[in-house]
Picture (cartoon, rainbow, N blue to C red):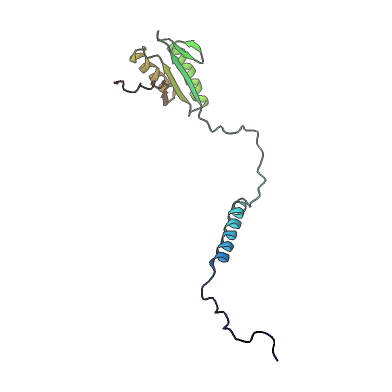
Length: 146
């Protein structure tokens, strides 16, 4: 005597396809592990760097501002100077920092010749980087002709 069903049923067929879900899960876990550990491996060299008294390097470029008003008077750091005094001050600044930039702020009424004199003095002093500071134009109203 046997226990169970009287009729026999066919056994289920084996799966012929690979289940991709566990494979994708394992791959995602490996990707996360590599993402987390990669930066740690890049900085694995431990160094004891020497100390120095030098100041830290500034990433921002240094500049000096020269202002010229409507009357043609030159100002350096809000101090009125003649062209000769300005040239001497710029030469001294250029000796201290050869990469110094001159930012020129001039009134729109200043004659072009005065600007050229200032640029020539700056170049003689050793300042070859000259920038012109301007104000942006106000946005035109819609429908207005330029």
